[in-house]
Image (cartoon, rainbow, N blue to C red; front, side):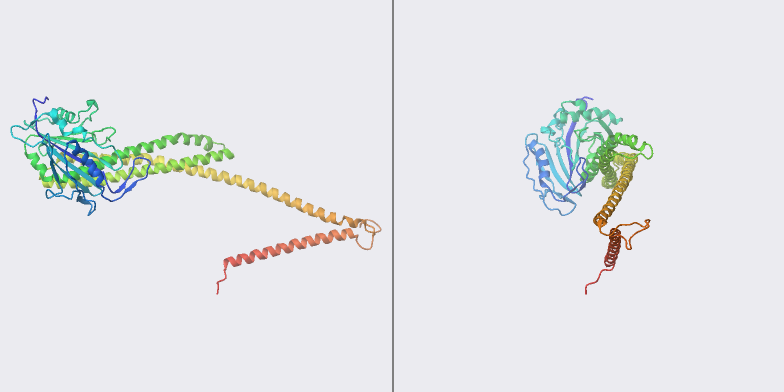
Length: 498
């Protein structure tokens, strides 16, 4: 559909940007979860607004509060209305708008609206001029980060025609509006059309899959709302101030699911990277002949493998924990989204069926997908745990066997040394008595017919030496035993100091 057949009137742009400022935030990099300090950071809020205001050449003094009175409060200290809102007007194009930053629970919620004032009979706006709403590409999303939750751009415009029966008939016009707004170098890479639905009597067109992060869709979440009468705008005004909170929960849900895809890929990579190691372990050790002991090199290899698997198991557990955290985050914020939407519908006194689709379709699907991922990875976790236990068992059994063999060898060596000691002692006794062989008394033996009246001095010396050695051994053994018994008794019943 060409611009001449469907001109637009009174275009209005709404910008919603979000960032965590407190609470536990799970990082997608190798860092552990961050516990963000619950303090106001006016520098980030000012920088985000200042980039846009500078592009429009608007000079607005932003006075932001630095205290934290509650979890839910306005950030501006100057009041131009019942809310902390700052109004402004551009110089050249005479566009009007307002700024409304808030702190919603654990996040910043930045809201800016800029619009072309209505001039009856002269408010026709050229689609080609929509780039004036995005000077210097100031509404391009910030790079993805741990605390950045994303942004939504909502562009509304009136059409001087009746609403077509087929809502998809205006999708080419909606796409043309966004291409004129962003003026991309390669229009083919612009995010594809996602869904269209009726909102308060107007047609809302959504671009950007909620599953896609900024790498896949660098333009963020885009909504364009075509109006055919004034009533939808009046209905939105009734519930508009709850819209920043609704979109906050939307982005929290999308961010959690997008992060879960990173955790899924990491867990899957851990299993793939260690699969070869596990297969090699089975071939080299579990399939061996029964009773075959491991060598020192085998034990060293197993210890290295065990350390690798312990590291992998820890990282694997972290990814599963992050997946579970993402699933819980989606579940909590899906309930918050539903409650906020119901409150908006009560204020508008009409259903918002289009926004209900996200709560009814995407949010439950995301939770089911992560639940399926956790079930898929549980066998891998048990496999790693079982392999680690098996390697530990092999190392402990073989190490115990090697220790027993070493103990037996040492015991044999000790017995031999003791025998040698006895032999040396006996030789020393005999050697010390050999001088008596040459005593004047003739040395005789019992089997001889004639022998002396008394045993030869050599035999007497040997006998006395052996007797003294046995007596000394027996006495020392008794003393050592008594000393050990007395020491054991003192340790069991210590004496209480008086």
